[in-house]
Amino acid sequence: MQQHQHATTTAHKNIDRLVSTSEVETKQTIAIRLKNFLLRRPTKESIKLKGIYKEVVFGSSIQSICEREKSKIPRFIRECMLAVESRGLSVDGIYRVSGNMASIQKLRNMVDMNEYYDLSDSMWDIHTITGALKLFFRELSEPLFTYALYDDFIKALHNLNQIKELIKKLPVTNGKTLKALFRHLDIVLQHSKDNRMQSQGLAIVFGPTLLWSDRKVADANMAFDIVQRGQLVEFIINNCRAIFG
Amino acid sequence: MASAAATGKTFQFKLVLLGESAVGKSSLVLRFVKGQFYEHQESTIGAAFLTQTINLDDMVIKFEIWDTAGQERFHSLAPMYYRGAQAAIVVYDITNKESFNRAKVWIEELQKQASPNIVIALAGNKNDLDTSRTTTYEEGSAFAEENNLLFLETSAKTANNVNEIFMVIAKKLPKVNPTTAGPQRAQGNVDLNPQQNTQSSKGCC
Image 1: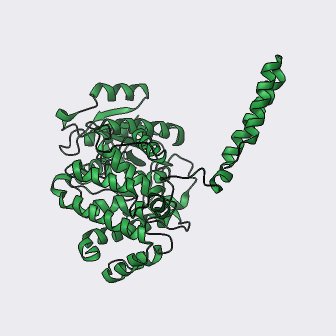
Image 2 (image 1 turned 60 degrees about the vertical axis):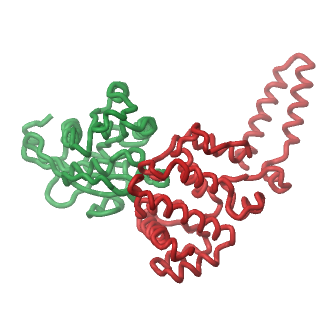
Image 3 (image 1 turned 30 degrees about the vertical axis):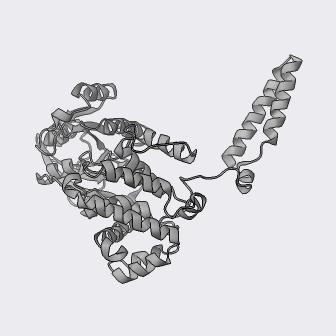
């Protein structure tokens, strides 16, 4: 928002300069009209309030994406998982290997702009897709495991029943998304002979991507925190069938 | 560089490994420190710390190695590890073009943010997989030359050039202030973060 305002002020100054240096009257009127137009432009915040501008997919929350799509699991997640299941299961280091950042950003923009995209198209490298999926989870306004239940989940580490109960406490859409994601990871794991990704490796990748706290953590504790998050994700991957049926 | 005064002395250097995920940073370190190679090396969490000592002429060079995690989620931690480092190895995978591009970005970042005298080596790892190569030796070496970097193609799997890359770094590092007995902080730099460097015990940070 501040950046937006800043940009407007800069534009304002530039136009003032334009106005003062311009000698031709028509040019002046155009500049003045443009200036008035720019100054009439509503702020990002006000259009957000009116619902015209939205943080569409990336940077939004699971609940609001599902509400808008009238779905139980965000469509983008389903499509990424489908693409991986159809052509990524035997790719060495799937989910661990990074994708091309420029392609990931391109895909992200297309998704946010609601443009047509087809993840089965070979233009999308499989590592771009896994990279975009990981980015999606990292950019959520709230982690998949939610802030409210973060401590409870960490405490429930290695306790199957407690974890089951906690998953039931999640918002419905988060619970459904979680279930779909872990079932997907279970499928990836079944192909670990080909892709060399064991549950520990998948957990290191997904632990910090799916859980984080809203409290500021000291650098020294961060590694320990990350280890615990990884352990929780690893436990859920390894007990996927017992937890989700 | 090995002046008479330096003879028989121990020098300690902080070295950091950077590079995209799955290029073989941990495998290179494991090969150098333990002489081993795991086909199923796990992803690194945060960073791992190891030490290895080598003899160079009459001197003993002790490397404190910080092996960082390549996963995107950990990138924000990298400055914590390369801060105060006297040497860096930026690793890419010769079969993964993207990792070479990413290596260039790491080098740019090091040149801007790390100690101005840092010795940087570029390692094109996995050169046992020559048939699936996507970055030629010439590309790597030309980039290294332009940017005044040490350059070798390595293979943690076959051990090709692994000891050598640490050796060329050891040769290039300036030998000032030999270490006396006992644990010591990194030499030759103003240490702005003493509390971080004191935890030089083994294991994950």
